[in-house]
Length: 277
Length: 329
Image 1 (cartoon, chains in turn red, orange):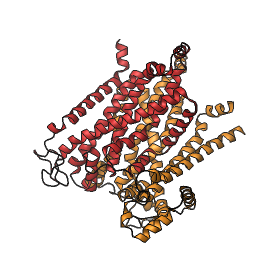
Image 2 (cartoon, each protein chain N blue to C red):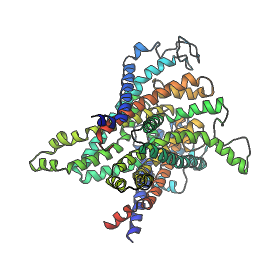
Image 3 (tube, rainbow over the protein chains, first blue to last red):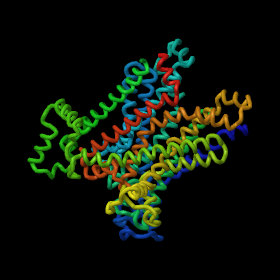
Image 4 (cartoon, rainbow over the protein chains, first blue to last red):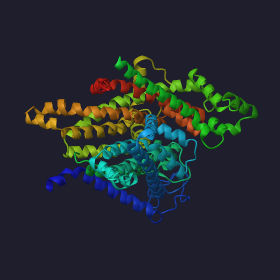
């Protein structure tokens, strides 16, 4: 028992840290209106104020409280990451299962498509597509979700192909088990841990992509997200003054913590998944 | 003979991919919702006079059939007749040619340096599996890779350029000095240092994680156990048996990540105002100069496809089994 415990120790520790962080951000997002001392959309002080007991992290260029902005930003970044990864995972699993299980024409079509999308540099692709849309919440989630599925589809396909040739599946087929039954009851169940792992990885990168897009000015300028806070800090040249300590440092730390939280939780799932590791 | 065919098959594969990217670039603005004139020209269209508007329609043959537009587009593309950028008031091709070398410099030095560091640290962590060193390296590098690249760049500028004054704040070279020879090289390197370090720090995990994973998998293989049983010295087992075999899957990952690593430079160039393609793309986005966005996207994609092709050609050198496999089939 003790050796077993040692085995997964490192990933388990990291996993616990990850889950704790996720819970923390979830609480902050849910309770944002109660935690935040000010309404982040209102002018509550003078512009470019330094941190004080009233404004913990000072104020931005138009006198909004940065601390409150960051707390409200949690809502946007967290929900966007979850929605975008959800879209990407649903598409990836659907396409992966179809091409892995049924094969045939659809498989070669989908696999060429994934080849194509995977070879295009990802960020420029997302940038060029979002340049044509306004950066609303829905659009950002759709653009990220619709471009991020191929790697998941690849992995799910290879797993489904491995599982479908297992003896017990062949037995089920010989006994007349229908495809829908085999898929739902057995194949999806076997790939479920991988789906969870991929979801975590997807959310990890979705947060960073959203931040990058908002930073490049492709997000919505009126929504409070961590990326837009940094966008305005960059536009107002905050990194050339002392303001970087309270204007640039905190949102970036939040982005890193949330995205690493997903990564660590993913490690935990992975260590449970692959007995060799 | 067979070998030649296989090499050519790869080449055809990549030619088709390039063709698809080029077509994608053409159809994207035309198939998206909204006025194609706005999608092609950018939002400045409302500022243009009637005649200029006519000239644009003429230039892109927007009144012709889509097929005619497409062939014209292809012809213009091949003859480097890419039109004029409205925000830069310069031919698009000359804007991009001036920028491409900077991106290549940044991306390739990053690719080489981060791969070497990634392999080194990955080996260190993987061989010390479940020891303190491994956990620290794994959690540290995971955390670093979760930092937004532009943010790390901003922090570096604040700390090293503004507060300590060690490095220039922006650009790829000193604009108002006429350096020549060795001092020019030093000037370029000084400007390169911060953007490159930011990129390297963030790219390490792309190689580190697969390397560590591959090592751990190889360490569980029977032949390693056998070697241990035979009493082969540990250092030989480690480097001749484990590390060499673990490098194979890492190289595959490396091929997949080339595009990723190129992507990183788009954002970093923006932060450091580095004169590369990413910076051009950013300027084009902020003025909604769509033709310029499109062609910079195209050029970046072509660079990535080309580097993928090169790594693909190198693969048989590293793993001879790949060639044998093809010959057997």
